[in-house]
Image (cartoon, rainbow, N blue to C red; front, side, top):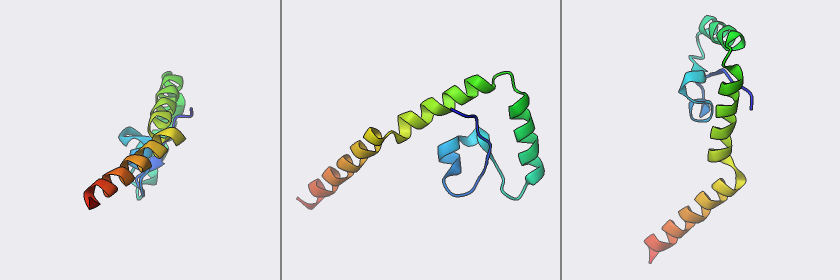
Length: 79
């Protein structure tokens, strides 16, 4: 995993997590966040937590399970 700082566009906050999203119109805040992350002694722990969150939410098996559940819900609603 890699720690990430992103702008708050699209679904970035959901993917990156609230703490890693900066207002897109604020490049100064983005630079400060990047510098802070690079200087953080907890950078490795942040990266590991980010990787675990992504694997938990977006693994192929998880996404497939959500699709199957959604289809089953839709079929049940039609019955």
